Image (tube, rainbow, N blue to C red; front, side, top):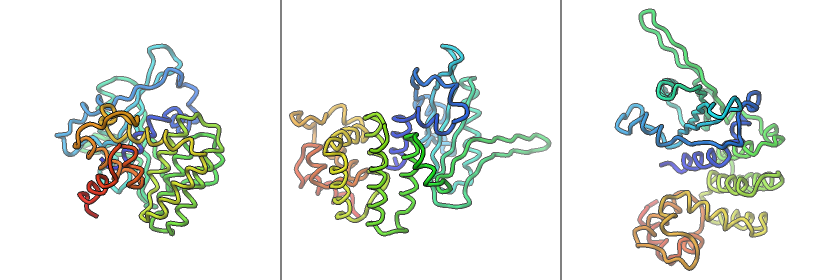
Length: 307
């Protein structure tokens, strides 16, 4: 599981109503957002068994059941894929997803591909098939993050615009100094906090910003953590930590995060620390405090990961 895939999966689930309004502005009124959503991850896995190497399910793929206002039993399916690299077989894979989903559910299906890479030319939009007079053309919705207007996104009142802005900042990594990256990242936090966004959604987006834009320099990481505490008046950090612990795996349900709860076996603690080291920029001290282990334990896990 790639950390960026995990973060996209989480943010899509947490702000999916905003995602729908963001991408389907003209048609959003037909969705009954009050009924909530059903994420069909297990069902999608069944349509694409892991043994099928050519069409193995990617962790970030989402299939979502969305109700419409046409009636209590009316619903449609939204398939979302976040693509971060050049793949010549991508359009065919989108077509394969589409026809298997349509055949299985016999419900309206719409597909969205979000491209997060920094290429200027890669954006497959159509799959064409032709053989001995038999032809098929399949088109789907595409969105290239690298082509988006930052100022337009800043003006948007939709919380999902902050998610897109975060992905744009992440594309700056390696092209600007880490100090500049820190400024851009803290600026995103300020922009988020200025918006009237429900607390839980704000926390989810903070997780995305905090971990999708990563630093190599530990001092810069520490500066960001300090800025985050200042900007949120020390009221949000624990909520972020709780949600990250929930994200890193089922161990959260067994171990818990309250101070008085005994951490389970060393293996479980090891696995949780390992995931936090891989998926976050938290200091050894913070991870040790969150999981309830000694800093030396965190250092040992880090050493096992190598460079």
